[in-house]
Length: 202
Length: 142
Image 1 (tube, chains in turn red, cyan):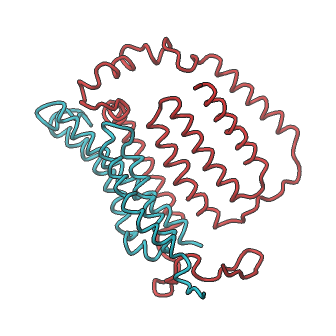
Image 2: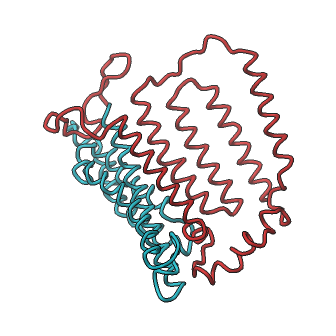
Image 3: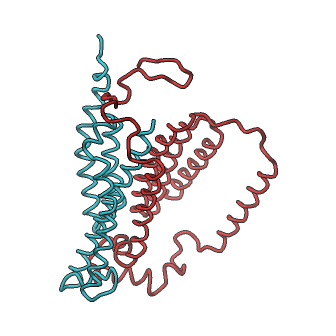
């Protein structure tokens, strides 16, 4: 049953990816990306990785969709038609993909109990058996994330902080229009002008 | 029936007003219940920010900016990182290594609890502030 659910969800993922590649409409692409993240979150739940699923649903399906939509306001809603589809590109993509799949053959099977990551006495075994006594946290993910690997998480927070600073230094928090000129209406209150110049009133 | 501009999104606005407190409450639950269930600072920060983003999408950016001004965001962004690093420096001052939470209390478990609490709070504050300011940055340029 679990295998069936995973297979169905993975098939959805492939279909969504093909949809993203084929569609020229960027808005549809962004929505499909959000859907991709949501289904990926579903797969993580099936794999019992609830914390990862939570993050994927909140960040991938939620925030990044909104940020993509925000970024789309800088550009057109339609992808430019490509002049030519090179055969050489296709060959390189296929070779790279085949190499990546070949690389996964060396990895332990999914969920295998005797993989090095599961049997390592100082890592997985230690966390599973001793983390509750050492940190008092029932959730091992939290104790690993915030305590055992606190340096990592510190680095991650600094990365988020740096990304915030970088985007703000490019886009800026300062308004272009002075505060008093800004419209008081919520978006959609006023008739908006679409890209082809026609005015439509909802 | 003629609808005035401000009334056009009445349903959305009222539903949003009803939802936002629950979103904020859920974010706080995810933040402080991360020790026991799934969740933690990153997820809580994103959910907390999404409440403000929802407000901005429905009520317009001007009104959200009055609730959470960009200057406050800039302070919060750094405050989270400082809280995280400050916890680490505090453990060093108390005689341990960087981020050695056992030093924070007499009992190592209590110390771990406090340390993880503070660190996750720092993560949550920074992530919230960065996400909301990214939204401000993108949305205010159109």
